Length: 158
Ligand SMILES: [Zn+2]
Ligand SMILES: [Zn+2]
Image (cartoon, rainbow, N blue to C red; front, side, top):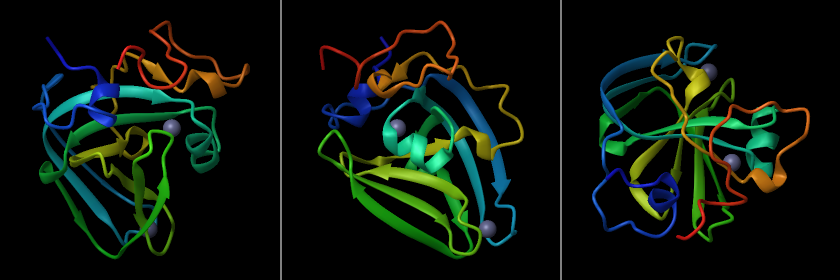
């Protein structure tokens, strides 16, 4: 059985990750051209997050996130990073272009082998099939969401 994403983000860091998608090859470059990212390998989770940090960073009602293995991701160019405490108690680190500020990658101290990819970075998003909304407690009414399970914070029961 596939392991729920909240588990990945939160408390079961010793369990192996279960691929949710066959291997992908993705690449993208930030608008100023300084940084490029390439991802090669399976995707382990896909979700939408309505937390207030995602709203702040994206300027939208939620972020769209895919999880890959950190060692499947390569970054080139000058990256800056910023860390803050996450609601889970972990430290969340955002890696972004030092020049134009585009987010390339997120990471959590709970799961250092996982890379949180902002889906909007990639021109081809046809592979993205989110299966849950997390942090629905801070969802904004105007932000229309697909008909998938919604959790107040992380998925319940974990
Ligand atoms: Zn969020
Ligand atoms: Zn840039």
